[in-house]
Length: 514
Image (cartoon, rainbow, N blue to C red; front, side, top):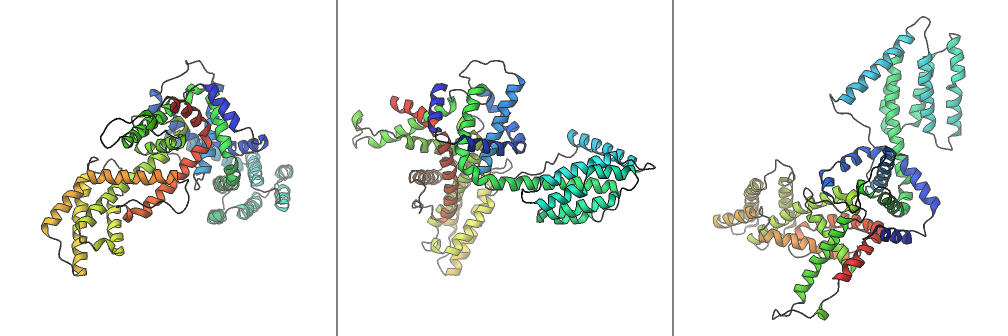
């Protein structure tokens, strides 16, 4: 697919949006872009980037072009993170222990504070550095104020008047402790409730240098609080404008430096949609075969809809080989989220398979006892908690689960006055539970197929309530499955809204050939 086709599609989709709104959104996002710098750097260094083919010949780029493009990616990723992740917050940077950066920072800071201490120890004291610090504190406090905080603004400006403070220092009349007392009081007025304790501790510090050092430390935390407050404030605005903003930024990156981050013809998106189309066509062809097995006529074959192909393509992301295959360019920012959903579904598949074979082997009425079913599910979930850690061995854990399940079933049957769980049944049940470790186990494959069918049905329903009926055998894990389905559908729906022009342009070519 040509880049020009993409551009025309995107421009056509975005003509109705206000330029003023876009500019306001861009300004808001750029104000906090440093929060995701590390995430962008780690994503861009992924080994899978090297494997990506280039649709355009490489060309030399300047450092300025590279930085500008990287900044665009960062802003787009930040806007996306704020919208998609309702719990997103900026956190204070914590350097690793014994790291070079941390050692350098400590050395520089120590030298600075030692210099300040030496100046204040002179006779008479030199206040040059101290006054500069007061100026920085003043600017920081003013930055916390909202437009309506006129009285507080006047107080800060009047008490922390640097010209007056310099005159007092020159005349030996400066009371630095009194300034510090005002600063701490103002910090207590402006800080979030979570910082009350840190501000209160400042009052117990009597020496000037340690006090100033801690004041700056608490101010840094207050800056983070203010940034998170700003994010929560702009989130509703971002929700309204983010679709157009992300699409615009994506197109700018695609046009400016496609080979640095994506391929200009979106090769991996095209490959992803082509595979989904082929798989879906194969399924429909099998269903269209007559009972005798003869090939159906071309006129009898149902045509694929773009929506069906897109939905099936998103389902393929839940079975993705993240180590071997590059992720499609348009879902790259959500790769970690899709991977997390994939891991949750794998765990849910094992859990559902274990419960299915257990309730099938036990007495008919045992699965209808809600308390027992919930208890058994919690036991198995806890044992599967670390399923995706390298140290986790599924076979060994399933052996433990088999032992525990048999004990719980025997105990439940005994309390109910039912026939005891025989040794032969225990052996068979343990064997069936251990067999779930294999991806080719029939029960496990059935559970996986039914889970994907449920998700596909939910996507096709337009995410309307109530949710579709859960397929047979999945009732014990219905709550967990519905939670995953809602997360998955939200992610898919947002991605569709942003990148639908690209998908429509690619699918218009693919479906013509099919």
